[in-house]
Image (cartoon, rainbow, N blue to C red):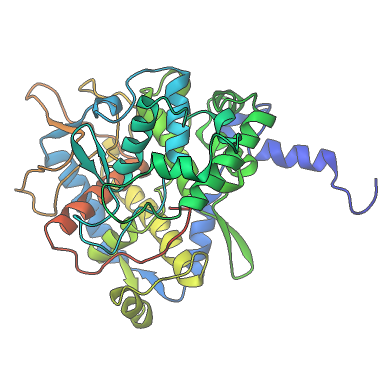
Amino acid sequence: MSDDEADPELLALLRKSLGLGGGAANPHAADTKVLDNAKYVFDNAIDVALSSAKTKEAAEAIWRWMQKKEYSTQTWSDHELHPQAKDDSTVDFIFTMDLLNFSFWSELPDEKRFAIEYRGKRWTGYWSLVAALQRALEEEIPITSPSFWVNEEECSEALLKHVFRSVTEEEIPLLQDRLNCLREAGRVLCEDFDGSFVNCIYNANYSAASLVNLLAESFPCFRDETSFQGRRVRLYKRAQILVADLWACFNGEGLGEFHDIDKITMFADYRIPQMLNQLGCLMYSPPLESHIRQLKPIPSGSTWEVELRATSIWCVELIRREIERNHPEAKLKIHPTQPNGHAASHDRRQSLALSTLDDQKKCTTQKHITPTSTDKPAPSGINAILIDFFLYDTMKELERDGKEQVPHHRTRSIWY
């Protein structure tokens, strides 16, 4: 073996340590390294910092709000746009959905932004994607089929424009990038996984961390990595939310069974940093805050952007730890099926919808919550996924009510 060739035994050991390949001796040991990387960025960040006091205050407030609100999640499939079946076709849909789940923000007012008209309603943001996919399937376009994606004659740019045709003049952002993601993922699935993402799930051996690592290793369009001060940093937003979707949709059973779901961190995008800043947990340097307030773009992979995303991951982890420290009941194992019989779910990530910072205000816009009956206790466990759901929902409510203090940062990329 020449010096330029990789040592196959070393590569096999590395894959096993990451829980890849389905043959790991101990799949429970799989680790995405996202949390470790986030802490490294936080420890070395210059323009983004955390307030220890505000983080502790936020942890207590989040726990209190989650316990006091008379709401609980319904099943993931309750939403009219999410697939109802619990089979391989649903896995195909979820994979396609999260393969293309990025960059829907717009500078235009709601009535002019990109929107999909479907079933007599207008859908924007994440829901515009889901609606477009459902509409395409009804039109007998096999938009969730990897073999279709690699057929350049049938799955053309013109066809994709038709799938994502908007009711407004604004087109879906990054259309070519979405087509590239489909092509790339289709080739990988057809060549390495017998044309089905279900085989990736089997390969992960019931490990959420292993599946995230497999996605990042096998699919470049899920490899949400960058460098920070010369060190590789993994953020893996879409890979992690894909695992969370599977977990929620299948109620933690069958194709959604993951023994280590709590290894998933929050999903680092632009909304969670905004909400953490609103809570006083996340602090920006004057140049960064000025840049964000002026709605100036921040390049993907830049120091500012990496600090914003990674510090948010670490902040949510500190909030989770603080809640567990003060509330031992929060350490209960998080199961997808809650005591009230409903499965953890999200409306994009809108699942625990605690609508606003005002304890007295009831949520009116969340789509996956229902009042709990008096004889069914609210769920008491917590993890980073649920905290992420809460923060995202609350920020969307504040934005709707015109109460956002600082806008979200503007980064246009395929990573979120």
